[in-house]
Image (cartoon, rainbow, N blue to C red; front, side):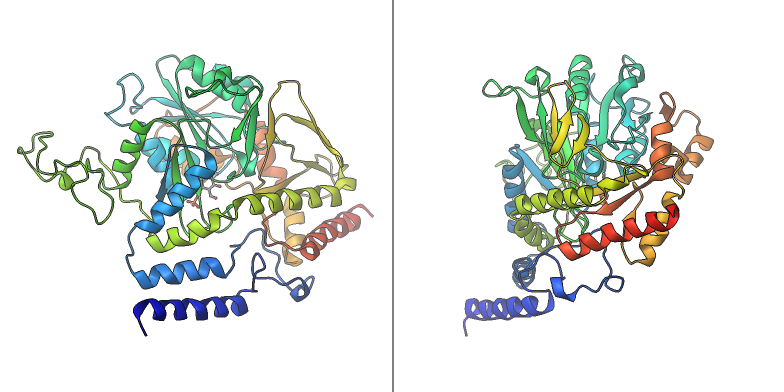
Amino acid sequence: MSLDELKAEILRLTRLYSQQAHGGNLPGDMREDDFVPGETPVPYAARTFTEDEVCAAVGSTLDFWLTLGKEGETMETRLAKYLGIRRTLLVNSGSSANLLAFSTLTSHKLPSERRIRPGDEVITCAAGFPTTVAPIIQNGAVPVFLDNDPFTANADLSKLEEAYVPGKTKAVMMAHGLGNPFDLGRVLAFCKQHDLWLIEDNCDALGSTYTLGDPASLLHPQKETPARPYTAPTGTFGHLSTQSFYPPHHLTMGEGGAVNVVRDMKLKLIVESMRDWGRDCWCPSGQDNTCNKRFGWQLGELPEGYDHKYIYSHLGYNLKPLDIQAAIGAEQVKRLPAFSAMRIANWETLRIGLADLEAYFDFSLPTHATGWTPEGFTWDDSGCRTAPSWFGFQLLVKPGAPFSHTELAQHLNACKVGTRMFFGGNLTRQPAFVQLRKDNPAAFRVVGELSGADRIMHSGLFLGVYPGLTQAMLEYMISSIQDFVATKTR
Ligand SMILES: Cc1ncc(COP(=O)(O)O)c(C=O)c1O
């Protein structure tokens, strides 16, 4: 047998194995009739894949290139094309993506007045995932926390202007909470007015779109006059944006993430340098002399002709994933439209199924929506709209309800239905941040009260909407909540 034939045979058997071991072509591991309510766990999220991903991983393992290579390029190209942006660079997690995106903005290669330096301020919001904020502090800058709107889970922007300090505020960095785009209309106009960087943490929102009523606030010059209204995926409005490919996210590589460079290719060179040890050279793995003057540089105080592969223009990291991970991701990207559609459909199923519990719960609303009916959302008059590719279905227990969110979470846990808190809740109350403030009272700043972030922390939880959920699971999730409320309100 030739090597090619051998490989084809291994992949044929892999496909067969995966079809039997992983539930055939179903998204996820579960066949509808395998589900036993109360016995089969209903996780809030799980990897969702078919034998194509398993074959891609095995194929790449057989090639044994290992480090980021051709599979990485394929995945990066597919994702950048899907988003309609200049470049995507893969990293080993969403947290690494946030660290890398933020660190990029500290580079000495940026104009001096825009470069983020220790002590500069970055506007973010209080409730969410810790590694949206940690890179700001890790780079010596100061996070300035806005409150969250509990109904959208996103920043409450009523104090955005109040948060701004001329000469100190350099950027806005925040996440689209649980897939719900934050109010980009206001944030873009604010960033444009004050010449600020915008990093969108798009880790939970791949596939969401935002419609700007007035495209005049777009930060990037457009080749053609933008349509009015202007609709584009989240993650394409800021200067940089980030993705996570950890299994609960919209697509997975096991561990993984990406930094999206929306337009400015100068930023791409810095992202790449910081990701790859801080090096000045931009040769891909396995290639030399892409610049055609590998031994022709004189930089820093190095001798003339010092090998460009070992010249470091930044204090960098090594944040690359394996090519095997990228091979899985390259297959997953193809499924994004279908995955998003299923997340949206699952969210709607839960919303309709729980609609008669509005006396006890406040359900999430997409940003700019003012209400929900089974026919659809009603919208504010900003001219902006959102179409979330939901990460989760958030509900807030109403004040005065005869049960707490913890009791509900415990009940659902006993029913084997997975729930999650909105990650770290009000981050300023987490031990790490309490200690930070003890060590240095100026380590972060809070604008106004954080009552919305506290409300999310005290009364919110979210359910899964991932594409592996079957109709039977969704119905069981709904009936488990209905039963719980019925016993508490009898
Ligand atoms: C908004 C947000 N940002 C960043 C991350 C970090 O991603 P990762 O787990 O891949 O490090 C997460 C994780 O879920 C997240 O929800």
